[in-house]
Length: 362
Image 1 (cartoon, rainbow, N blue to C red):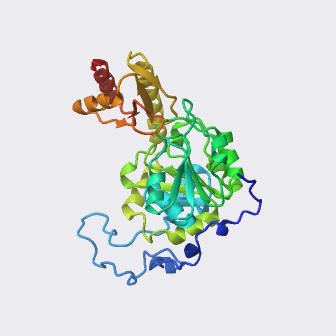
Image 2 (tube, one colour):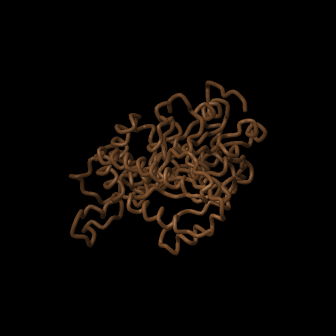
Image 3 (spheres, one colour):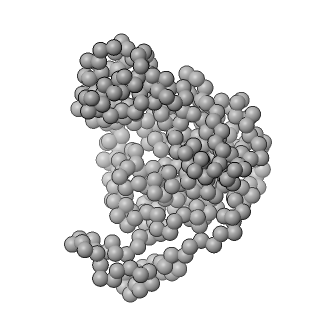
């Protein structure tokens, strides 16, 4: 890894076909005045008579393509400028866009640190980008910076880091993350999907320090809005500009924007749910640690725990399915043999799970 120049040149990383692209111009984006309430809208081939609904009959109109009202609400909560925010149809759309903008198919590569979130690799393969895997350090699940140096070259365009990490649940050392951001000349994607459950502070407060950093967050986890699919990208204004240029015109529905805006007004309930989840996480760890065939429960800064068993985890996985409990069998992925990932549920759900595991006969 080379020391990055203070004059970071983002355009040198962007694919040539993206640099030269003329984005689709949606009907409403052509107007500077965004107040359309008293305007006759005959520009987007919408159904002017409305939809066959008896409530909220404005769904016949296309949504705000840049989600400006929602971005302002998010910016106030996260204490960052709306200009540093991109909203995607889930974080998966943002991951896809990052590959589209920065990595040339069959030429460039990305780097990931398994075990980690699977879509970094899947999206790379969809785009024809080679994905180099550098496993986390066994037992502690931290970045192997020495091994990383061996794989950095002129074709290294994107590094994905997940912290807190999925599926291990632990925070990645901040100093290691900073070293990579400062020394890597490509794009660093820091996935903070579970940051609201962690005692660590988000890197979003430092986004203006790092021109090559893209932070991923989401409303799916701590905010409990997985069903409306809203991912958050936080980056420099220049990176946000290119994301907006490449994204689909109306990528977030009016309904999703409306629900998200209302949910974000209820911060007290948000914090109450987080407190309950952390309490239940501690309860689950304490109880499961006393079960004889549990080998280890890894430290967690998330709303799930990774549990390693002394017996084959896939057998427990299928046993729990028979008891109408779905968990995630992670035993076949790197460094997770005989491990189940268990999401923290309500107290009633957690108690039922523990009772069923107690009854399991190895």
